[in-house]
Length: 148
Image (cartoon, rainbow, N blue to C red; front, side, top):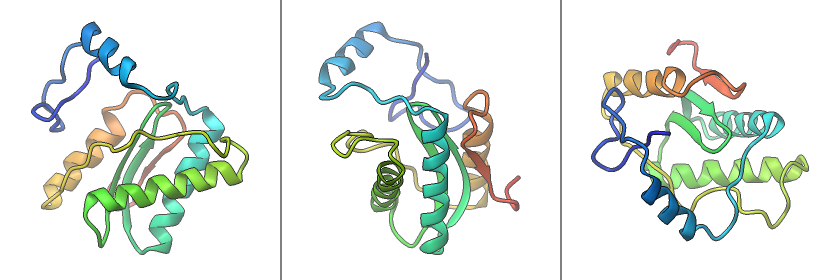
């Protein structure tokens, strides 16, 4: 499948063509087998993300929980990197508490892709990408009523 990199990661711009050599290189770097979230796990992650946003009074604009990654557009009181860490921690806790992930299972990549959104149009574009640019809904999507 196609992908993005640091230069090709803006919604609406072309993605990179599949690169078998890069895929092989990236697989060699894995310390654990890739995790594939099933329907129950995706629903659990979606509930976790909604709950933490509500608890912290963060605005959840949109999210799309996929089988092997999560897209979320959120306005928080922190920079994107620590926000992502908090969201990943809570998603992991929800999965483990529900018995949907082993206690020692590594679920997420070390980091992830973060973008700063500076104005309303950036948020609209990001929400469109998250909700419409990921393929069929797998049951873990959310759009804030004001964003839909």
